[in-house]
Image (cartoon, rainbow, N blue to C red; front, side):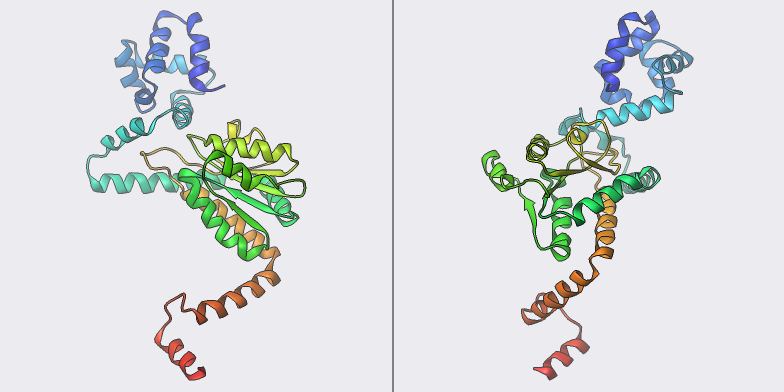
Length: 294
């Protein structure tokens, strides 16, 4: 149960002071999540200790744990306009860069500390044994899916990037999916309805579903067989993709360890093509060598 729903359900049975806190949070959850216990007490005309007792009665160890849960709940509730308001908390440009990068570091640490190695290995095995691999991440998650697709095509022969188009065309792209196939769905709050519906369809067709998202118990994990969770705590209107990208990087490297022979063949062919069509800029020494060969 989401924390706001939990508070709404418990509020009628609360004391007057606790009910005042509950009503304030329900009406101002976007502000309450970033208020100290003392500030929340001032806003509701109760003491700081009353605020702390309020959180323990809801089943939390204390106010910090409650606040963390409220912030997580916010990610799927706030509109882009509401998230834009959070840039106001930065006093200057230097404050912004330190806050945003510090939050990214925390996301990486939290992801590493909580990674489920069993789920990770299940995902690796499912992908290695798949007949065809579908990758889908749209809107803000599109860079993640495109990055993953770029390297997966080096690792495997049949990889499809499901692109965001109109709904009919989207389902045309995944219509052939079936048993022995894998769909990798990537989405973060606010979760993409198109990605979730595509995962539901793929599940009905018998495919194995791997979800890359921020938390369990969300619409993104409802239909999946494997859950790869990476933190993306909200610090501004821009989604933090640092931890998800790192997780995908780790997944690609692990898959590569099992596909060394295929990778070697792929890169040898690619290097020949890249050199032939001058895809990349080359250093002077190598350029001279190639001119001598030609």
